[in-house]
View (cartoon, rainbow, N blue to C red):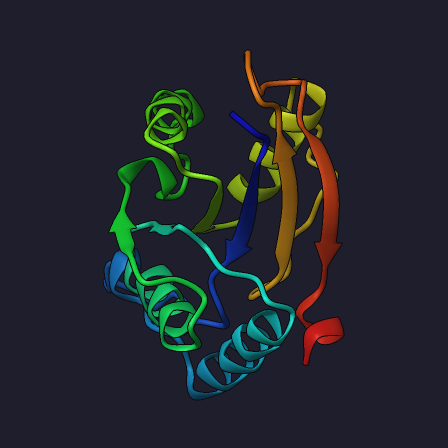
Length: 166
C-alpha cells in the first residue's frame, strides 16, 4: 500500500447568512461559481484526479463538489456528515481507513472553514492550532502515511489561495 494524497478544498463564495434562513441552504453566488470553475479547471490542467470527491452535504459544498466533477477531477461524489461545520474528524478517520483498504489513493474533501484548516493541523501536528486559514475555493494538500495513524504523522505539501490558481 502506498501513501495517499488528501486535498482539503473549501467551498466557493456563498450567499451571506440571512436571518431565519437555514445555513445548509446557502448556495454559491455567481462569482463563487465562476471562481470555483476557474480553480477546478486549473487543477485539471495540473493533472489532478480524485478517486473520490467526499463532500459536506450542505448546498454550497455540494455545488463545489459538482463543479470539481464537471471539470473532470473525479467521477464519484459522496456526501459525508463528518464534513459539516464542526464535523467529527474521528468519524472521518474511521471511514478513511476503510477507504484506503479498498484501494483509494487520492481523495478530495470539500468542506468548511475553520474545520478544513483545523483538520489539516490535526493530521500534520496532532492538534489544531487555528493557524491555517483556507480561503473560499482554496486548497490544502496532504500526504497521509502508508500505515498507522495519520494524526500527527501526515505532511503538508500544498497550501494555496484560489488567487494563485485563477
